[in-house]
Length: 562
Image (cartoon, rainbow, N blue to C red; front, side):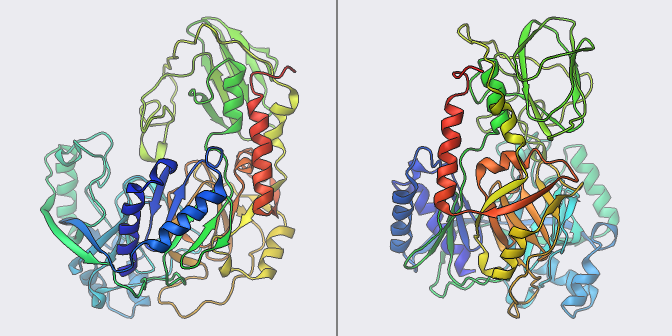
C-alpha cells in the first residue's frame, strides 16, 4: 500500500512539474510509472537525466491528499459467471463461503484505472481479508464485461469484453464504464470509479442479479456511492508492495531507448518512434492527405465498397488482389474512382493489415483528438465499432492543393519484410536467464490464430526463466500490474510470448522479456497466422539509428518520385 500511494503522489507532482510539457502521457501503476514522450521532438538522454533528478528529489515521506468515496457494487459470485472461484478458495486453503465473505466484506482500494477502458484494479485494505492466486498461464482471448477477477492479490473489474489472465470469481450486473450513458452517473464521465475510491463488492443472489440487469437496461439503477471524504495518506518509507513483483522500490519507466541505472530509482527505457502505422501514413501521402487523416483498415480477408462520389483512393499493406468493377487495378498508385464504381479487395496473399486512404480522409466521431476507432472502448470512428454491410462513410473535403503521389516500390514493400523482429531487452529482464535469451533469439516463433489487433500470440520454445522466490500466489512470470506499451513482449506463464499490438492494454501483469523497436511493430502487423519470425536483440543505440533512418524515409513521403 505505501508504494502505490507514493506512485500516485509522484505522478501528481510530475504532471504539475516543468517536465509536463514534454510528456504525452503517464501510466501510474502499483509500483511504477510508464512515461510516454516523443523522442523525435525531445532528445532522450537529457530528458531521462531530468527525470532521474526529479525522482531522486521526490520526497519519500510526503503526505498525499486524496478524495475518497465509498462505492458499493453488487456481485454474483461463483457458478457460470465465476468459474474460477473454487480454485481460488482451494489455493488459499479456505472454504468457498469464506472466499466469498472475504471478497464481499473486505474493503478494496482503487489504485489504478488501467489495462482497458475504465477497468479498476484494487487491493484489500484489511490484510486479514486478502486472497492471492496465480494468474492464467495462457490468458483468455476474451473476458465477459463485468467480470470480477483475481490475480496475485489484486482485484480487477473488467469494464468491457477484453483479454485477461485473472481468475474469474464473479460478475457485476452494473457497468463501470459507459461511453454512451444510460445511467445518470455516466453523464459527466464514462468511467465510474476513481483512483482513491474505497470499494465494497456486496454478494447477491441470481434473482437480484437479474433484477438489477433489468433496471440498468431501463435506466432506473442508481449506484450506492457515499460522497467524498478528505483523506491524507502517508506514503511511508519502507516502499513495500503487495503481490509478486520483486522490486521493493517504485520503478519509473518511459518509452524511449535506455536502459540505464539511476542512483535511487531504476529507469528503464525501450525504443519507440511513432504511434501511427507506416502503411497508413504512406496511403495518406499517396492521395495528398496529412499523415493523421483517417483511413479504412482491413485485416487479412479484404472488403468491398461502392463509391458514392468522385474521389481519389490509394491502398497499402498486404499483397492482395484489387479490382474496380471487376477489372484488376494497379497497386502502389493513387486511383480516381467515380460514383457507382465497386472497389473490392481479396484475401491477402502476403501481409495482414491493409489501409485504404480517401482524398481528404474519412470523417467520423472524434474521441480524444482522433477519428480512429477504438473498438474495445467503443470510442471514435464509426459509432465506436467495426464496419458492417450497409454502413455509409463520409469524407472530409480534400484541400485544393492536395497532389496525388506514386511512391517508389521499396516504400510499398518495406513493411512486408518481417522475418526478423528487433527488440530491446527488458524491462523485466531479471526474470529470464541468459540461456532463455539465447533461446528467444535463436528459435523461430509462429503467429497463433488467436492473435488480433490487441496482441499477437506466438508459438515456440519457452525461454528459461529464473527460479522464483516464494511469493504468495505467483506464477512463473506473474508481476504486479505494470505499464504496457505497443510492442511490449509479455511472457505469459513463462511459456507464451505475447507481443502487444496497436490496441494493447495500458498495463499488464506478466513479465516482459523485451520490447520491439517501434518500426518493427509495423512489420509484426503484417504477419499472418502461421507465419514464422525470429527475434533479434539490438542495443538502444541501434534502435535510435533505425528510428532516425525511418524518420528520414517518412520525410520523403509525398516528395520522392518512383
